[in-house]
Image (cartoon, rainbow, N blue to C red; front, side, top):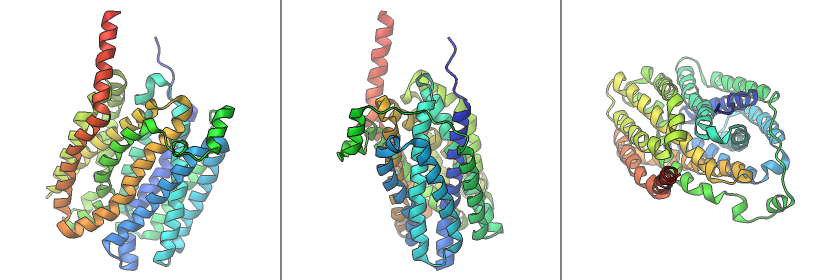
Length: 402
């Protein structure tokens, strides 16, 4: 029996829109702390706040849009938010004070939260259920590739040009993402009268999908560690005299992830989440430990490969679990819930970690992150892993008796 088609025109377009938005996000996220410290002579904790305020705004926007998305209309929301995202990207050229920068970072983050939540909701309907793990994995590649290309461009441009060039490149990516979306055909969502009444109400359950919360807690725990990499890798690379090779960290990250993505997604669908998750969390922990001990380019880049395979796959697998746990009419809300927790980690993490770095130093921080990631195995087991193992065993027994 042939599998339902995954790579449709609309799947490719929405993945492209997601990619260009995330490239702009990571391009600025990787360089904005350096911009703040150099332009305004601010401390590392304030620089972390400039990163974190964007993500906090993203989080708040997700909470609101997840509830009202289907009522307003997905394509309409996507187009408007992409226009706002582009305009605010351009306003970075006029950031002549720290306060103004913080304001536009907040608005930029809110627009990004709406874009990424809407894109996730659209693609959840485009992916066939039989290929949920594989399809979510490939869609997540648009974000994973952006994780590599955005910081890579940011580091290269900050070394050889200036911050105005960085803002220009971000603006170009924003324009391309907007143009691609004009050709997108979004699946129409029909809401029942009961569902419309639910949208009009103000219960906490209407802003979150309860079934997606447990696995979202797990991704929050893992992403707290990962946020230390996104915000401070360029500063750490300067600290250990590996600035030139640091530009290739996320390229190696992406190549390693691309090499493993074709079979990790299939393993998720065919063998279950546990088969993929446990070894890859260990892989991620080893990657952070290697990063803490990096004294040469080889160890530094090996760490990038291990972190890419580990975090990139775990993050997309957890997203697939969140979507699978939710009823069909609440998949958009499940996507929103999942990213709210992920954004919370990315928002709080840089500020807290910026303070911790001042106390213990970079190498000790990444050792601590490695230990924390190993502890996340226990968190995952309690939250979902134990349940998944029981369900898989029950399914195997039932199949054997048929």
